Image (cartoon, rainbow, N blue to C red):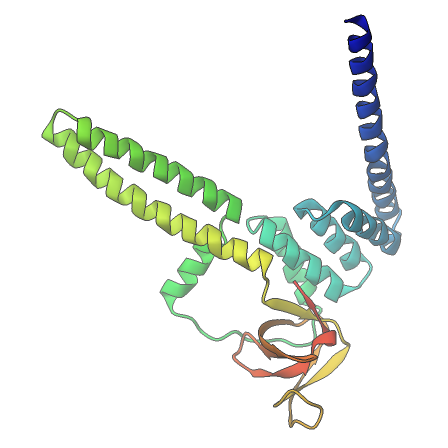
Length: 255
């Protein structure tokens, strides 16, 4: 029995030691990134954050810090890219929105978006008011209310309770479906993004997916585009003002 306890204690000790060793490089990189940022060496700070991103995966705070470092370094396309990625994870952050707008003010192309129906604008604003996880939790809460209302309807002893529970059940299930759809849309946008940032200093958008196509318009780095389709090494893009054309895929970076 004592031998088993000794073996278990050694195993637990080894596990915690390994965990501490795995955390040390991350903590060290974070410390160096923060120190470089504080000292004004923003490119080094971004490089440290990129190393953490490559080794340990994505997170809102990491994207936000990368955006800040590239913004301070004057690399606006990269800053916009990481701010946009952070927006997918936390669309309600006001500081993030402000920083993104500041970055976009340095972009050469000023694209005026097409006018939208008031209802569509409201829906988009509501959709972006929460992350996909938040919408999913709200959907689960509404479904729980629906189940409780269903129980009250079947087991309630008064007509008033049955009427109230029936109305509440209808509202809760409708809202549960609505929020679940929102969660699905945001999750899909995060997993399979169809938006990108132009990284080439300038690129001519063509009428067809080849260099012999007619020149339509010129785009500069930092401009946000929507990807409609792909053909070989070319992508069909759409701008916020409705303009459509083809450009080489190596000129953009997917959000």
